[in-house]
Image 1 (cartoon, chains in turn red, green):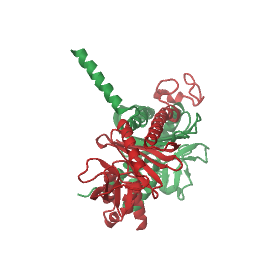
Image 2: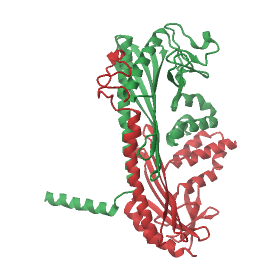
Image 3: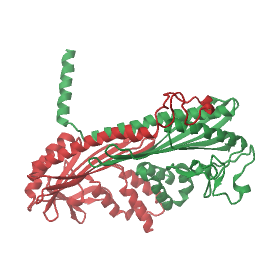
Image 4: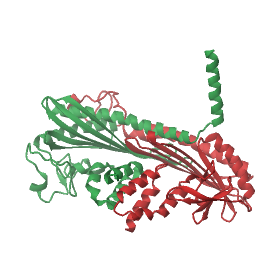
Length: 273
Length: 287
């Protein structure tokens, strides 16, 4: 029984962007004889939501906020600096409730707020639909900076997610983290793009503005690099697997295929060069 | 109404990371053992290569040349490991129908002759299009004709230029040919499993993996068994050309576009200004 729980948990954690509800519906249909299994998935839902940086609109709020291990208060509650609130989050239904006022205090409060402000300008300039947050972590010794952008188009059978997570250490000036892209295309098939780019840089001045500037620069560079990799995969590995046409640039004459000889020049060098 | 578990299993496989289909399939089977047969016969997985002991040539393994734990080589027509009871499970007399694809179906004499010719023809095809790789064709008898599977596999090794990239292509073309006098009706279902990965110091890890399936049905004239091979050859060649273009579009066009939809390299407000300026120019030209 525990192995079935592990299997089903792995399905939850592997749900593509925006498709958690579909995956859960499939799991329900497959475990109809053991309906209790679904109620044991709390930890899997929590892991999925915190890793995938789930976003949720607070009751009465206008902007979505982020659910992550860095904004967790424990006991199923999370906080958001921008809206100065904390809230309870139901990991299975992805709904927020019990909103309370949450006022940020402590050593990093000013840095968190100035980083939020600069980050907001950057995010608005480059993401159509992104949520961002900055949180003091590890007993106020560091701050976590998160950007998550989702675009779902299930009617066209694709969904995508961009996640950036950075930890800034004000003492050393180190800015470390990663950018992850996840794209799913599933019309008469199943195609997935999964990328991970570690970021290791430093911000000497340590101001919110310079942190946002460093992030902006890294992300621009990364996206350009990723775009180049599509071209090089297409021109390299993909072309090397199967030619569009034989070297002769003509389709095979199947009526005469018995007269073709392997590895011989067929109208100009079909053999491996 | 509850959804059908088999449909739900297939839906799940359409959503979970296609790079690990084999693992998901095993998990689904252990979760819902009733679905084992249906899932194994309808979910395509990357092909395994084996060397034929009799001829020394490589061939591909799939459900259609399997009998228990043994696989039939298309080059020697022998099972490896040899079947325990030679007379029983495998052999079928000439013209005898041996229905039930897979499960070690050995074609009758006429269909085996066509299978031999098809293997030669697709070996040429493989060389011309893949310039390497492995191909195998397996046929089996049907009541009103025959059916078969054309398999192609190619891996492209590390290619230099700063980073390292790797790719694997698996083609699985399953067809049924219903013979109707001077024409034959062909129904082809083709799946290509394409896995690409690259990494680099500034790029990090990129994995682009997946599978796509397409179907086609066509009536074509037949005047000899050779024309069957030619018909199947053309169908598979056209399908692969179509699918290669489709894969190129999805893997390198669509994926890149979605990334661009998530994050814009240029500034969104500049883009907005440009579009407004353009509208103004167009508007002034109309006046």
